[in-house]
Image (cartoon, rainbow, N blue to C red):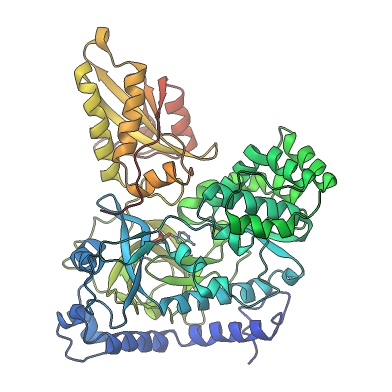
Length: 598
Ligand code: AMP
């Protein structure tokens, strides 16, 4: 079957037979969106008909959309939490899914400060694998010759734990990289990585990053694309290079691996890669990295790179200028949209600029419904949501919240993402990622909402009581000017007894107290991943928040409705706040974090 003209690029036909099949599959799925969705829902309802969850709603064997929609409620994680806890505690009965729960995927979304636990089934790995298998065939339509070299991808596994009932709990990517699907993937010339599996699977984040970077440097001429999952991950790798290039250059010139790399399997595979000293390459790296100017460093070190493969939509958009700086203007490619609950879809025009990126949800992955979202309307109560719209029926220009029903047994589950329809590919809608609901601050995979921030402020300001001081106003800012980025809190204080005002040390401790009360994803990023820097409090001169209000009103805000924004990101506002800073304080130590679950 010919590839639809909407998918094909100026390059024309698919790069190979395998690509042709993948593109054909995309065409088939997206031409029959409504029918595929109906089939998916039917399959899910048939297989899970006898589960405890579905029996509660007395579908009586019905597998049609209307009965499903009229009887099964739209839910949040918190609604499912008691049942999820039973599974975590060891209940193996069919609660959500007729198939056994194989493990929990730990979402970066949190509930009561802890990562959400998403029950999954083994078969979901096949579905994730299927979505991955579509990415390169689409990319090959736009960029030629990707089979002539390698991808330098910084990929990591993270801490995994067991629940009290003995099920593994780990992030979805850790689960995928540790699966046979990934470890024993067949050779594919379009998908050759510079990083050996041993380096990716090494649980020690320093050893993993070090060896992945070393491999990237050793194979620098072969690298055709550089990437990580999210933009923050790629920038962490650049920062790592800034900090460790001397040792890396030393290893290359001596032909001997850094003794800090102790993992036997990593040492073993690296011994085959650094077989002899390469003083020339070492000299080149020293020359490039020792200079002050790191602009375009990626293109200088990896001169054959055609694009950067990182997600820069959503919260990651804040990193675009920095990536453009280090990437010397290389195109940024966002290829897929996925979550722990389910992998959703892919970008059919992966070379489009970040502001133009739209993801096509593949109708075969799960059953999707859409809750209309009016950006300025008051929040809708969960008890009486307006009618949900099916995937094939959404309208261009409108915004929706994504609600999914998965093969693993989530039914009408609110993912929390707000998407806007931009267009259709065949009958499948394409969505711009607008934002995740209720997220105020995000640096890496952390997501901090307003309530969490308020609680953190309350806990920290308890330390100010003995100084008769309170926080009268605050706002926050995700500062990503340096890597890793960090949270900045702007505080205006009311010091009732200036002779006994809080000391610099006490305000430093307030930073730590805030970090201690932020959620576990934040604390893990701070402690284990080093992907977030110490939290900072900038104490402002009195009257600054009034100035901020004046500024907002001068820009058209209504005096009556004005509320202090709890997070700021526009440069004039940040500049205004920064010009009124009276003192600056940083967290003196990392907060507590323990991978063990309660
Ligand atoms: P997690 O549950 O930790 O796997 O995080 C999944 C969430 O990450 C999604 O629900 C989105 O909010 C966000 N996300 C995933 N892919 C993208 C993307 N391509 N663009 C923007 N945000 C994304």
